[in-house]
Length: 178
Image 1 (cartoon, one colour):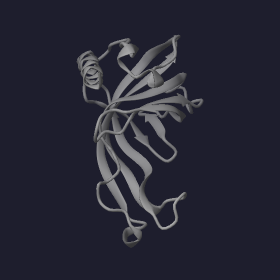
Image 2 (cartoon, one colour; image 1 turned 30 degrees about the vertical axis):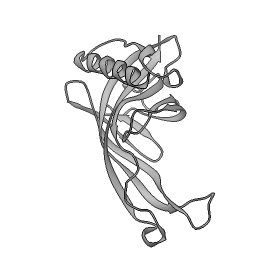
Image 3 (tube, one colour; image 1 turned 120 degrees about the vertical axis):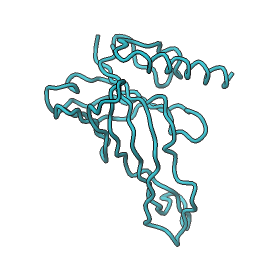
């Protein structure tokens, strides 16, 4: 079942990548938790390429234990032809178009995206700043992820406070009300 689902998602995103201006794609290939509610349309599709910073910190819920903690992304957002159209950075998680408009968001759900990959994600956009490409964005999906998981290196008291950058890539699909 998982292999079939993964193959279906991969096939759908290959089709999506091949269509630079595809107005819509099949939400049914994604886990239900990260599907955008009905009544929305794809406004923009980007490929984020960059890295995610993690810091070795003491666990809040377990004295004497340490873990890699997500600090934030730093990625270029490219259109389907490879042209840089914006950036994604944080904290807080911010998507900014080259036209100056930008949006932050609140995470609604995540779903596994395969071993070694950060999960698929659905976020609800906060009101945008500026009147450009990000104006009116209601949801953002992170799909087709590659890499980005916390470092494999040990995180202990000896290296507490150290930071590691991990490369990743993900498609960010921006949705507006239909």
